[in-house]
Length: 112
Length: 109
Image 1 (cartoon, each protein chain N blue to C red):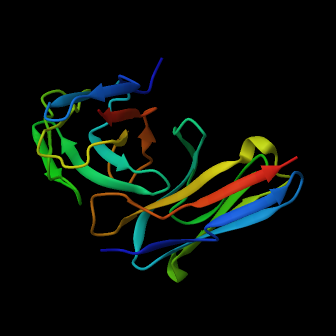
Image 2: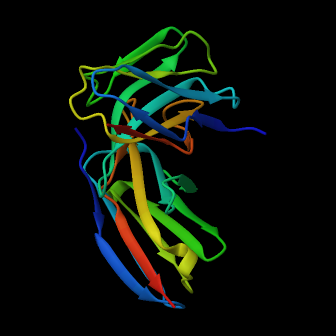
């Protein structure tokens, strides 16, 4: 089944802990993105990658880190430096940035 | 950066009614998409429409790139159309999507 898979769907984390969110795609897309959505708000870009082994910061990258070692995978680590990590995180991919993007189902992260 | 504004912010419709959602953007774009965010949070692709007009069932969309706006038409609305509708754009010189603030649609039976 082709598409973008995010896991886990729900994640609880203790304050001060790092946590990694998974994003995998089998669409052979070059570009991948991570967005954050807070309740009642739009989406804000955290990081994006246009090619393997390369990525750029988005508008709200502080407290987050990513890697792009494989074309199919773009994991996001929420570090303890992120002051307000509780949010809904969405991953997306596209062949090129000017082409159609597709989103995963999202991960809801709650810090307890 | 580019400004993306959607209107109206909230819309309540009776089932069967028609509606028009608008997306205005402040710069030239080479990518514009409309999404529907369902109650579970997933973003469903509706249209990839950097210019022109497309139709898919009860939904259609028009983008007038030279005038920097796009419209999403929903006809004969159903309760399952409820949710938040986002437009997202990429500028001609950019390499990321910018999302509008969304239109929250509620369709009542």
